[in-house]
Image (cartoon, rainbow, N blue to C red; front, side, top):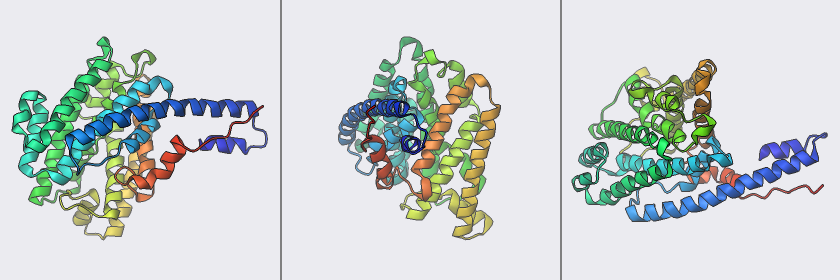
Length: 349
């Protein structure tokens, strides 16, 4: 949208081209608002039925993130799938982070690993509806996929299960007051940042006729059971460091695990300001790693990698200036309003 304003200010801009660009933007926005309305209805029913009042209610913010990954009309299905899976992941994340006891965390992880309705009985009552909705929503998302695309769901399920394992490890640290080394913290917190899980989710809804969501791309995005690709891990580093810088500035919940900032302070014996500077520099180093790996990678994987890089770029916007625009939606309200609601004048030729 800002590009339209900047182009209009150029003395030799093409008025016809500008009008077409504005009309194209409005058509895309119309589709986005239609999707957002449908997703809002889905989220309201889900959020009210699971009754997890401690969990963040941030559907609009997550959809804003989604539009930064892929805004084109052909990616409508991908946006809807991503927003739904991310919403479910956020509910699970908040359960581990701010509410569940350690015993309940163990039970939740066991149920997630089993991924079967027979596991409902092992959960505390307040989590049972969430678990039912989780399984049913994944089944519904699988139905959206074409028959030859259904293999994709196994990658996403496995990534969701892996996220649960790392959330549990952080819950153990928090409940036992354990202080990990900086390296040990990163080993876990990069995975709990969500990026290794979200990589296959980004690809899951992309139509395969455009050569993005190939089997090779899913193998790359998930590491095929081994260590994830450097673009994924470096994106996880950027996400973790930006998140920890933002959370450090607003204070912690009682149950929060030590952040990378706090682990850096403890390990290096430095103060808060020095640690924040060092962690911000590590986030910049993560970007250099992403850029270098992107330039050197297999050209067949570039379309998929570009979506992951877009995911990281948009996250940078959400955390711009040390804020957490997902947890505190008001911090990016102006951006959301500008993208979805602010009018654009159309030139009449």
